[in-house]
Image (cartoon, rainbow, N blue to C red):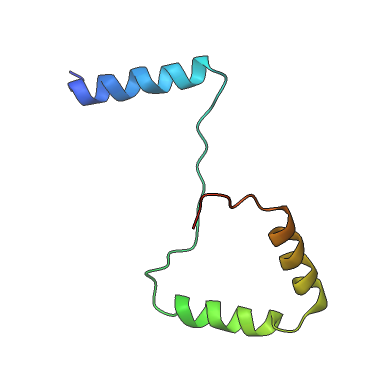
Length: 70
């Protein structure tokens, strides 16, 4: 027998599907894993000074709508 919460979640999901949405599963790196911080730091250093990285960051800043974020 489904719990009231399970039914409520099911109805919510059905509504989302009826609206044309579908669920997707996204796997992301586990920030709690040992070595994660060091690997982020390593990758950042690899990109430091790269002209393509600067160009990309400039584009992101120019096209981002951050109004109301601060």
